[in-house]
Image (cartoon, rainbow, N blue to C red; front, top):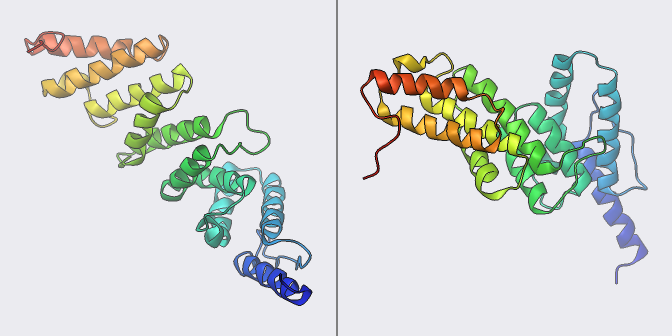
Length: 240
């Protein structure tokens, strides 16, 4: 059994560890000493202060810059395996907002695995938030001609095969997968010559249509059929 002196030293050490990470807040002022609180309370106080600061920022770009700048003070927190659920999900949201997939996705999967709830004010669960965030990020990356792997492909697998999400989300993933299969954002279907790509994209679009009839792939399917006809190919892959 530890003595009162040992307990006091342990508390001081815990607070010192947290304050070494959270030495600065968003307004540049040092985090006040919270010697009577646990290390996680120190982290919560810092996050709460950052949230208050964000409410005073109007432009989205400036909000993202603030989050990117201040996320670094939580780097040691993110590296730990015992992060409380409310802190984990709050930082996860920031990471996704900033497009930091290498850190956001693993943390999000951990939150899903442990059944963590989203922060107050969010109506969706963690899995839905992750799926929406990765999809939005992947759409932007694809339009810019940037790589989306492995994050989009891994999330596509989870959304289609493992998670039970809204049909619209699954349909949107299948649609984007089909568009990526055809090529770049500027790729015209009438210029695609590889039958494999045309058939694969069409199959994805048809699956998306089955999930949600308003997903918006009918025109793409018609374009693929016209291209297949132009190439003197059957509209469906012939069974071997």
